[in-house]
Amino acid sequence: MIQDIAPHRLHNEFDPAAAASDTSPVFCFEETGFYCRMEEDRLVLPRPADLGADPADCNFLFRLDGTDFFVCREKKAEPEGFVLQDVRHTRNMTMYPREQVFAAMTARQLAYWYRDNRFCGTCGHETSLGTKERSIVCPACGRTIYPRIVPAVIVGVTRGDEIVLTKYRGRDIPFYALVAGFTEIGETLEETVRREVMEEVGLEVTNIRYYKSQPWAIADDILSGFYCDAVGDPTIRMDASELKQALWVRREDVQLQPNDYSLTNEMMLMFKEGKEPR
Image 1: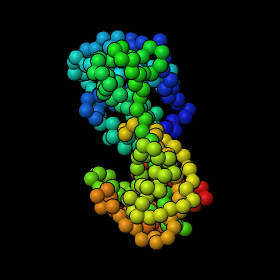
Image 2: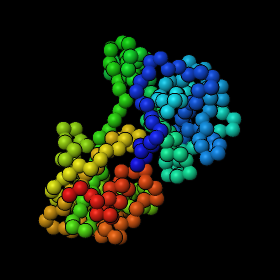
Image 3: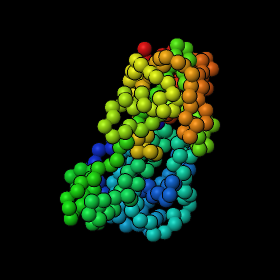
């Protein structure tokens, strides 16, 4: 999956002493993209000077292996020799090293969190960066804001040697996926599984069993994967407002996604090979 980058390691713990220099690699996001260029099959990021930025105006993000990465809060110049690369496009391109794709996705999540919390949602005062932990603090009312992490489930709904595969409406994604959805307030993950399966494909399920989790920074998610067994009437009653296709598919006919980055693809592979938890 996307986070499986060993022997590389993303150190995501906050380091209050980390400070950008003139040579620090910097993520600079605009809309859905970030500035980069390719050199010998690797992504190269701009430095503060390329963006006309003061290193002091760059926030620490994380450490990948031994290199500190930062995000530029405000660029003052177009970085010559760099192009805007869409993060979702980067995720779908296997030509990029996996650790760099994972770093770019994680950087996007943190960069947008910094951007969206410049002012306090409680009192409207301008916020400041926390100095002891990764946080944003309102100096007026004392509110502390932490990075947003949204729980969601991926569900392999099975019936013997068949699994439910879906395609979502309104998304330009040609390959199949599994039932999925966000956890509601006051709901357990297991209850999310039951509700999402019923809402999307109209099936009742039992024997809900956990598989694995995955951070999915594009949507601020922490994904939890579950398998479960359909019970009762196996007829799929698809929510046409959410899905454009939902069908039972036999193990041998499961078509995998084009890369092995997603939890969804790994769960489909496990079922195809008969290795899903029973």
